[in-house]
Image (tube, rainbow, N blue to C red):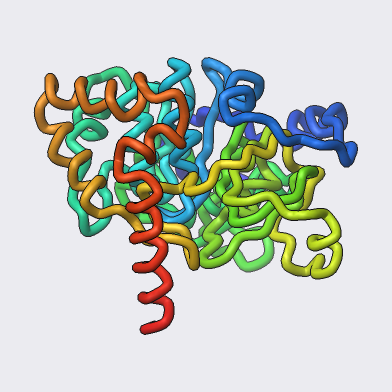
Length: 329
């Protein structure tokens, strides 16, 4: 297949499926207890220089506790998949965790506005960027999950997004039509927040999935943070509800309200007041430094972070709001 055009962007991960297969051949897939603290999971599975991906969609079911822990531990020089990245991007930018970024949806926090710290960091010259669309990143994860080096699609062509991507175009050998070839993306480590998991890593989640199932299958190492732990018998009684199977999972971390201050479908609504605090604080360097010290660096864990931002009273208010909105919907 002859390449017609290719983007100017750098490809940060090798799409060779045999490299991924070789890794998975050595991965332990035993059904063992994988429960550990989030601190230990990040220490064990998240390394400087790794390529990182975060699950969820925007501020929905995002593993915010894990993002805080990555920043708290001072992880650096990571690659990052900016796929529907909002508050997670904001946190990782504040900690200057990544220096390579696959850009799709970043900087914006949807209707809340633009993140000043994310924008400043991207404009600092410290970050290499390659552009994609959200759909393109999803297809790239699907390619890795399928064990193929790329998948064809019909998006980005004729745009500056293609120009600054690392995609290629070629003619389809069956139809002669021009297609864009999207290279497989297999993150070194990914983190997904779920509603329920057993001790082995069989997970359930509700609401929008976006590309989390593809992400789980494409990732070399996978950390799960979960709202609650359930028994394996409960999993076995309804196996079709399992969204992510145990053999893909390396660590299970029980973190109630682990998506706070974001939304968790059916569990709690986002804390818009606190997200606004973030947006306001990051406009002033000194105030933002103090804000980060208070909310991340000086916090022992996510439980303490919640305690200083309203504690269980605030959490129950957000839970009641989510349940009310679901009832009205």
